[in-house]
Image (cartoon, rainbow, N blue to C red; front, side, top):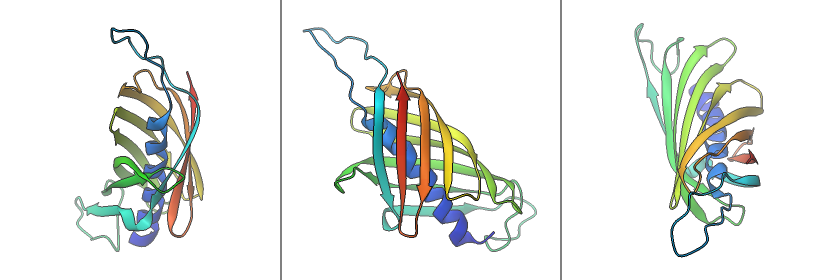
Length: 164
């Protein structure tokens, strides 16, 4: 599996996680109330040029051109809403589990101005992958649902579906 392919797939998966953080939660009254879990859907995008990629080579050391199971990579960078406005930052860690099938285990955190959203799951070589939204902080406390990540040549689209 080439580094470009790994990076493109990682960017897609990461971008999807960011979208989850943008759901609206209502907080009322003079006192701060515990936020309700987000509901509905949200779409976000991560442009290829907004992402940073770092390969992690573990023994046997063979480099990014010849990854082995257990190697991994980290993707960081800005995430944007559908209008192209920067809305936060993504941090994602991928651990290669099956190099021949281009599969990896992924954990991603979307850092937004009013909280964080966490997603996790198995990434495959398909152009579309689904991940679990496993939680969040701040405005996104109690977030649950699915994140669909769709890969394209220059960006990754993220569709969050919150269960509430």
